[in-house]
Length: 196
Image 1 (cartoon, rainbow, N blue to C red):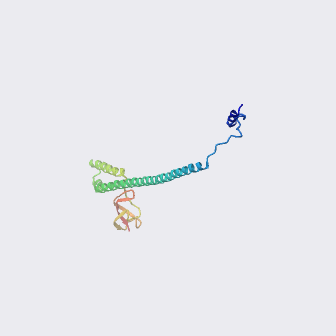
Image 2: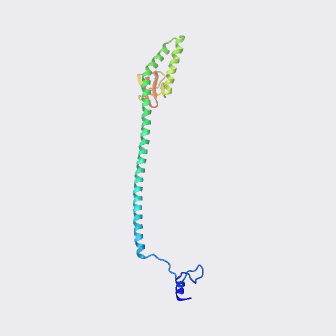
Image 3: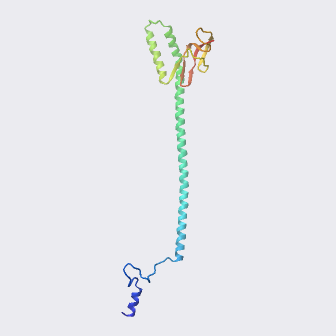
């Protein structure tokens, strides 16, 4: 082997070494200190920019989430308010209609009391009275006749206040006209005789 060939063999990495072993003269590539610092600063700046963008996006997301939650709460409040107003409007309409019908019901009651029991028209008048009462019941309007109850000025209208045999003082002895109510709302108080 001449001198030129020997130099080539010595420079060839791994020449003369066992397979799988590194040559003792082989150097591992390392990064140059100056190159690593420049690449690291660029990466850090890019990461900081990405983090700032994520923070901005998260803030916008939180803002939109809060807006969506407020909008949903406003809609739920609106839905409840509309349902409540609708129920109140329906109740007011039923009360107004009932107030218009009550004088007719009172007249039918008077006709039934005054009619001869053998009169063939009496059954027809009774059926009409029952139908009107059933119609009021379908919209939850009920009549009440407080005979024997303690007088309550919120529910009853005293027409006469007099001593009545067999009735305790302050109780309803007789009902001239029944009262009507829709739930807790009194459409018309019962007109009564109160025992003194």
